[in-house]
Image 1 (cartoon, rainbow, N blue to C red):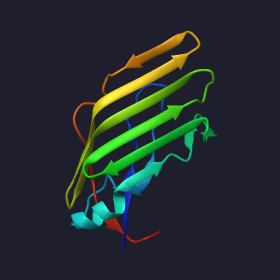
Image 2: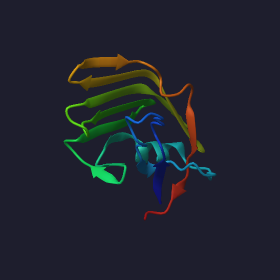
Image 3: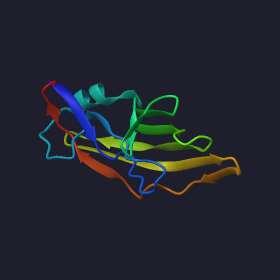
Image 4: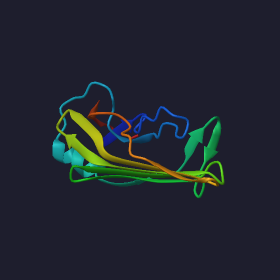
Length: 144
């Protein structure tokens, strides 16, 4: 058995700066069967690297886009660099927490920093992407 997490729209950005970041590894927003928390933690903890970003029918890869998504000991961190439209670039840093039990994975960001650089200067926003926690059903699926 392999734990699988399908996290659609992990960041939930509504503005045009970012499209949904899809991390397909361990949690499904479907009904879950009872699963060992230790099994889920062992399978999903670690660092994930953004390999490509799909936007408006185009596929972007490093160095145009780079990102890391970290799940470790109840902490979650997301860092994204968007250089799709040079010379403009945006860097997003999100720090938060996650909770995991035998049926549910929930996460939320407590600290948000978005840096937007343009030829005319740099702006910074600390507005949260959303309030509270987002929850997904956790389940174990056969390896694909």
